[in-house]
Amino acid sequence: TRTINLKNRPKGIPELTDFEFTTADVPALQEGEVLLSSKYFSVDPYLRGRMSDAESYIKPFELNKPIISGTIAEVLASKNSKFSIGDYVSGMLAWKETQVVKPDELLKVDPNKAPLSAYLGVLGMTGLTAYLGLTEIGKPKKGETLLVSGAAGAVGSVVGQIGKILGLRVVGIAGTDEKLEMLKSKFGFDEAINYNTTENMNEAIANSCPEGVDIYFDNVGGEISEAVLFNINKFSRTVNCGAISVYNNTTLPKSISVQPFLIKKSSSMQGFVISNYVDKHSAGIKQLAEWLQQGKLHYIETIVDGFDELPNAFIDLFQGKNKGKMIVKV
Ligand code: NDP
Image 1 (cartoon, rainbow, N blue to C red):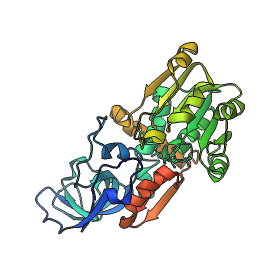
Image 2 (cartoon, rainbow, N blue to C red):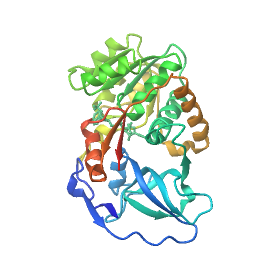
Image 3 (spheres, rainbow, N blue to C red):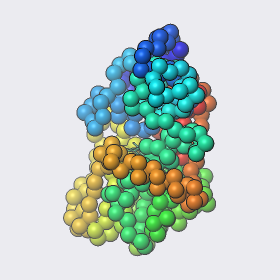
């Protein structure tokens, strides 16, 4: 079976040569273990952080060891009474075509309740991030204006829709006109801004948010988020969820000082990490599933075919090649 290891710690944008494919036999199954065949892998911007050895909220990957990400797999053989052949499971698994694991941290997923890939997105980590980030830190109140960056991605597209469900005015920022069209027609955003074709983001945000920004759900950081500061309202909240625009930086960027903006507007910013809210995960998934079933929530996936494509699909996140959740199907 094949494995994808981290070969080098990327410098700047990750390259294919930072990954290495290896082949080895699958070990024999021991008591308590299951043999899994990978079906869908999640590729996520946060994996870039784990490829670096800088301190973070999660341990770095080891060199010459497999990359690990959210995965859906099928049980091919089992020496564990809780799992049977043909079960589907989700968990943090290695980038391997097949693997033997102790299934302590695997969850069974039901392909009859939702398509398997959905458990990596809207009914998984990115859906929960959207829901808990917005509700716990954004603290939305009906009628407020919500601005979302990275709006056409897995997290952002769900944040905007939940904003609409909760009665907010929702404006999205994304990288192509096609994505802006999708935000408005498919996901119900009130307005959208293309950061690649807009010269003055500060002005564009002011035009799209005439009453100012009450909640900024930030997936990208950097210059886009600096422009937002000029438009925040008194007592506004920023959810610092991600900063993809700076993940590949090799030098410290020059940035404006945020403090005067926050002071002037009694505004707050708070970092969000999904693993801090484990006690709220199951209630969150229940709510997301209910909205899906009621047709209030929609989702989109970019599904790339083939185990060989995992490194490419990951790198493509940094070029905005995905709409909604980026997933690799094996
Ligand atoms: P996305 O599906 O949003 O994919 C990444 C998107 O980022 C791309 O499609 C691209 O869209 C945009 N992007 C890439 N480069 C830049 C850039 N330089 N400037 C602005 N936008 C850029 O990924 P996710 O939804 O999985 O994650 C979104 C963010 O949330 C990430 O920053 C991630 O790290 C963070 N996150 C944080 C979690 C937490 O617990 N804190 C959990 C999950 C995610 P476009 O075409 O619009 O540029």
